[in-house]
Image 1 (cartoon, rainbow, N blue to C red):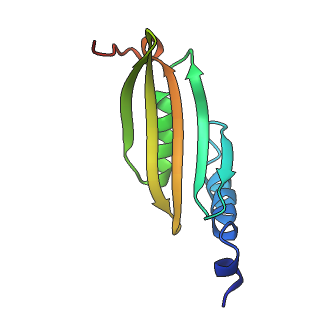
Image 2 (cartoon, rainbow, N blue to C red):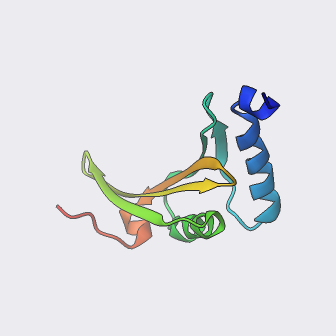
Image 3 (cartoon, rainbow, N blue to C red):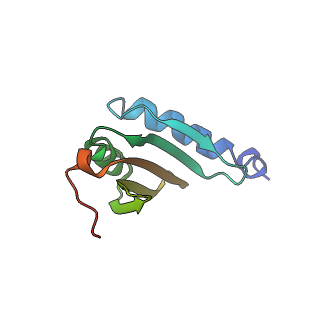
Amino acid sequence: MAASSQIPQLGPATALVQLLQEHRHLAPATWRIDRDGLLSATVAFNADFDVRPAMAAYAEALGAVLHEQPVSSAGEERMTFHVFAKWRDVQVNVWASCSAAAAGSAVAA
């Protein structure tokens, strides 16, 4: 049995190093690898600037689609952005959110 199949985090850790080396233009993020090997990142949480360009860059680098979702909670309107991809045989989830006003969006009532 190969070492990487015994250690689920090894493949995602290697993929993360490759992603960051090959795409140095990507926005900084907080990265996590869960015990099953899912690689995930938070680029921004409820930022006051439009995170769409940063998330579009992640989508392009990972060869994935950028998903946008309006969210309204307790009168606060936000936009969330997700990129779900399989990159170098690793499941990757990149997430960010910002105020709807910063994204130039209005959440439907």
